[in-house]
Image 1: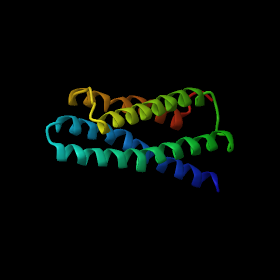
Image 2: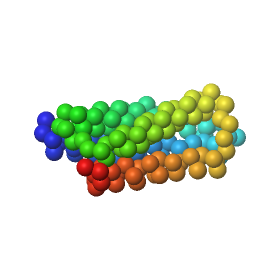
Image 3: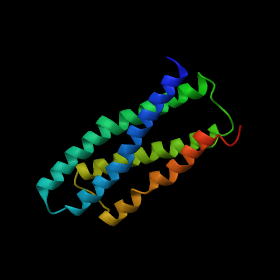
Image 4: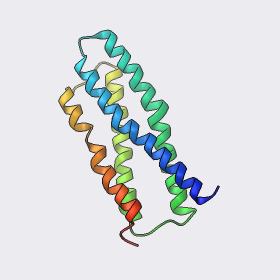
Length: 141
């Protein structure tokens, strides 16, 4: 596989992962707001599960795998890679946290309100911006 194709696939995987990282907490907001509506809650549980396991998790795994291949097989490294890897690890931890929150909703033991989830939804944006800057600008060669 050529380097150009791998980079294109890496970007597609990353966009898929981030779409899930942005949308799942938004579903949590709506789920937390519909606490009285049992039919609505069941619908949100299905949507959240399918998003997490069907889109987010495969997207995250493929993003990390293709990123490691780009870095270590195609030797696309520099000092900029170290902070980028640290930020990606934060995103992986955020992804895992989303999975734990998903489990809480599944078992009807959510402890947070919709306002908390609105703030939680903003976290990946704060990480995405420096990741993109590091990947595009590569400031520390």
